Length: 487
Image 1: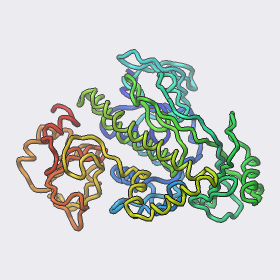
Image 2: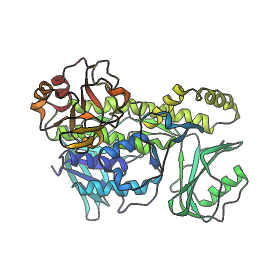
Image 3: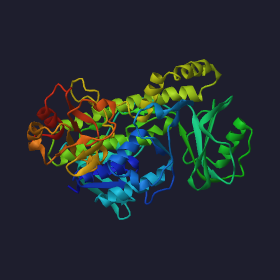
Image 4: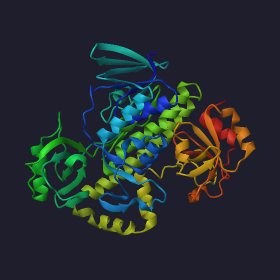
């Protein structure tokens, strides 16, 4: 084997996965077709769940002081994410290029072997391993790996070569995106619906402005490259009446509203994550964030299988858990597209939904959907409200002083949180000490309501609660064995 795991694609999902694998002790090679990062930034900012994820790995500090906000939208209708009690605020206007830079430095610092200028030509899974034909500066050669993960975007070579089914709907419209300088435009942060389409304007760091423009009734074009800025400026003028042709274009791109999802996230020894597994309208910037969460879910599981600390069945939970998330992602982005990009015929629907969003329960439901906080994985039956859900930030004090549930997850290991100083609990978990950290601690200050009366929590490396006491119907050893293998 050239490597136990090969990841194709050094975008946010691929780099997040590489770092997760290295944290868990699994060697990984990342193959990237481009010789250097483009500096282009289709994605901007992080959703609430990604902010928590980065914090749980200590990555968030690399970004310094980022602009945070609770203001968002659903299909162009304003939505206050502040209804999500106790959650991190989302980060705004962090270019994807910055995200990729920090993730690459983090993954490489952990020992990930990142190879640029390497184009994957073919993939063959023989059941015992995967042969990957790669063309690089030194010619073409074949690498062999036990596991191959395609994180190579919406046009994924890995997905096509490995024969994944990718059903869905083709694009019905085309939108332009441009980062420009040298012109002042009024902000339209969540977009503005106009008689002929939709426009959006938002400031970026360094005096750059991002615009998005969508004209209704103009079918998508088959393009070999990006559109010209003249096309973008002409569309902008038709919709707004304003002439922006004198602006300096920094980056221009086009995208559509195609919605597709693979039928399986794992096919033999090949897996997919991020845009390779699902494409959709980039409503609310969910695409990059969902890809990062795919990697966060897969990394510790794949590493456990590679290190023979878990059976292959653990990888089945990657598909089960993340395919359902991707399915809802496509549902909500298609709904937002209908609301945002349709004409006057849907105005009654917009008005009705706006009235409903004034109810806090409705606002909380939609906010949780687009931030990733609604996710609940199947981890076993029980009545505890945190079962299968992400662990909220909990300030703690223990034998070594102050800590938090967030800090305890930074080594990317399982955590058994003993909140009642229960020696019997600790004895029952002792056999898993190489894989799970048992921490006896007491909550500090005001704890989240969901933890009230809780005496113990088993938290997976991806921050989701796998067992809780009282409230889980499974016993602790059963839960430990399910997620961390036989000791």
